[in-house]
Image 1 (cartoon, helix red, strand yellow):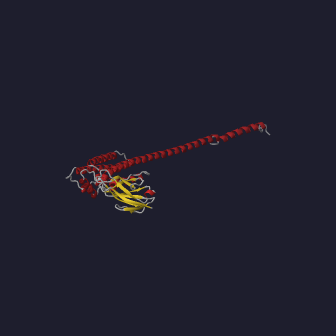
Image 2 (cartoon, rainbow, N blue to C red):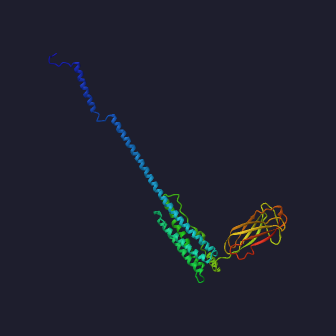
Image 3 (tube, rainbow, N blue to C red):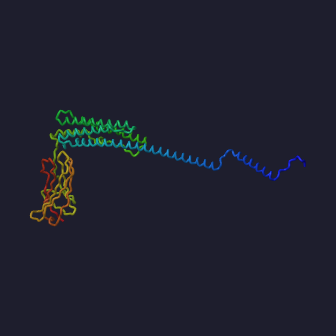
Length: 381
């Protein structure tokens, strides 16, 4: 070995060199990771990303639900506007129909009024229909029903003109002859009353339903309007009859009077006759069906009917009286009342009894001779 050759490193030197080399290698490996953060930092970053995603999803859901709620509120307001509008339309139609009911009574029963009463009713009808027309003009329809609303408002205005012309014509007839009013001319006024319903059906009713269907509005009913059309008030026959009734009576109070038309015993359908003895079978179901004819020219209401069972003189038996009333009888028609409830104890079985039947009188009845009759009856077991 040469004196100048390097000697191999000692153990200590070798160990130190290895440590230094290991540190360099370690630093070199650490420097080759591409700058990735430690595992804990990566975990925190992932958590932040997850929280952000959850927040975004929650925000989306909130916005979505809010949009649905706003849309629902808007739709509910729309439905409410249609409901309120058609409710107001229905009230106007009902009010106009109520005026029409007064008109119907005037046409069909003119003699139930005095001349002053008819004049007042003519003014009242025009005033009430005018109020209906003004009410219709103040309606605030949904935007999509403005054209239909115009049809409705114009219809009520046309009917108001009809009532004005009706008042003038009938008032002229009430004043006397040479009025120029005829059944034909009065019938011609019918279009002012029925026409608005025809336009309503054609240009309002169906179109309103179609508009609501397009707007997805359900469970809202469009009111109907057909009173004047179905009443058939303005026929020439009815107008002629009304004019004749007005012309016949100077007072226009009409003729009042009812008459006893007959008495039938039930059960058995036995008709009682005056001037003879009627044998009647005693029964727990016994009743007397009294027929009453209205011989006047006006409807009579609450017509009284009285049946009295009169025992023979000297008998220790009291009279029995039963009452009833017929609610209404139209002029020229006949109605009945059934009287039941007599106490048929042994004292009234066998002897001749008198059965007195009375009907009316009604207010303003002038002749009452045909209102009652007395029958002789014998009750037998």
